[in-house]
Amino acid sequence: MIHRQFKDLDKKSFLIIYKSFVRPHLEYAVQSWSPYLKWDIEHLEKVQRRATKLVKGYWKLSYEERLKRLNLTTLHIRRLRGDLIEAYKIITGKENMKWEKFFHLYNSEHNTTGHCLKLTMTRRRLELLATFSLRVVSQWNKLPTQWSRQTPSSFKNRLDKEWGI
Image (cartoon, rainbow, N blue to C red; front, side):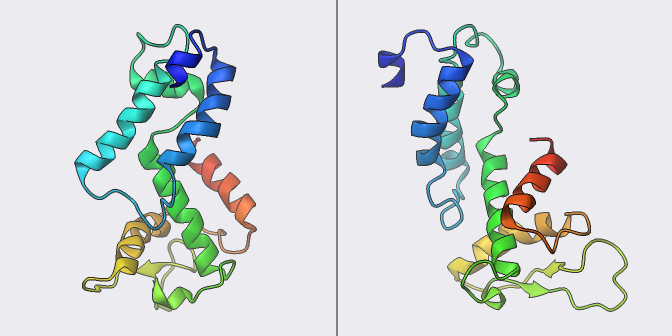
């Protein structure tokens, strides 16, 4: 539909249209529904791949180069970022839910590496909450120290800076 309505999109116009109309649909409820099957992941990424070709002069560039020039990231990175932000809100009490339902803190007095809010993997069979927890734990534990006492917006900014987004 965007292709039919806008024939020659420049970078600025494309980003406004894409971030307003397309990306919200691709990221809807990402924390509760993150595609598991490779086919589903590729199908969603294909939408962004096609959309980035709409920018005038970008259709011959590789997908990675188009993302770099448009200052966008892959949807996988966006989903992971959203998961970490949601985990931060849950762990620090910014969300009105019990964090113990999702995570278990790593309980070691001799832990000298990383931050004080390290998490452990727990095995839960057939629980929807476990999929979110399992996706987040390994990435959460890779975060540097001093991440625990921030506002959600400063956490987002620091995460973007850390990842170079």
